[in-house]
Image (cartoon, rainbow, N blue to C red):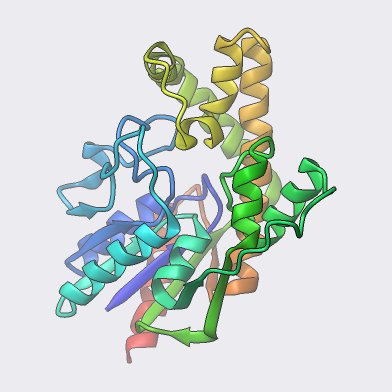
Length: 285
C-alpha cells in the first residue's frame, strides 16, 4: 500500500506521516524539493531524529547542498524505491507537487527547444509563466537563462489521469487565518532554534547554489548578510513568502490530483489521525 500525504506548508504533514507509518508498519519517503539537501534542516522544517520515532525515512539528506537535484532525478529515485519495495507499505510525504506528479504519474520529459520564443519578454513576465507551469518552482526570476530553459522544456503527460502506482492521496488543510498564524509562529520558532546560524554557516563558506539562492528562509537571510535588507525585513519576507507558497501549494494539489482533504484539528491532532485512518480502511475494503 502506498499512501501520499500532501498539502501546504505548516499543516502537519510530517506528524501524520510518522503516525501512519507506525500504524501500518511502513517507511516514509520525502517529497519535498528542499529536504533532499544536506545541511538545510531548520529552514526546511526537516523531520528530526526525535520526530522520526525510529521509522525509516528515505530521500532525506541525500544531496550535497552545493549540488543540483532535479525533478527527473527525483522521479528516478522515487520509482526505484517503489519498484523495489512492492511488498511493503510506504508513506510519501511532502509539499512539492511536481515531484509527486512526476514520480507517480505517467510523466515524460521531452526536449522542445525554441531559443527565440521569449525574445523581448521581461523577466517578470517570464517568471509568471514559470509559476503558471509549476507553482512550486524554485527558479529565481533574475535567472533568465534557467527560466527560458525551463519553459522550453516540454514536460508532458502521456495520460495525465494515469497513475503508475496504486496510491491513496491524503490532503491536510486548514482555515487560512489559522494556517497563516501557524506559519508565522513556525518562522519565529525557526529563528529561535538557530536558523540564522544555520544560514550564516553556509554564507560564510560562500555557498550560493540553487537550493540556497531560491529556498525560502535562505535567500532572504543571504540578502540580510549581503547588507541589502534588515534582519527584521528578512524575517518578514520569509513569513510572507511562506504564506504565499502555502496558498499556491493547496491550489496546485487541489487542481492536479484526486486528493481526499481533511481539516486538521490542531487542538487534538489524534482526531485528524483517526479520521484519516478510517478513510484509509474504507479505501482498502
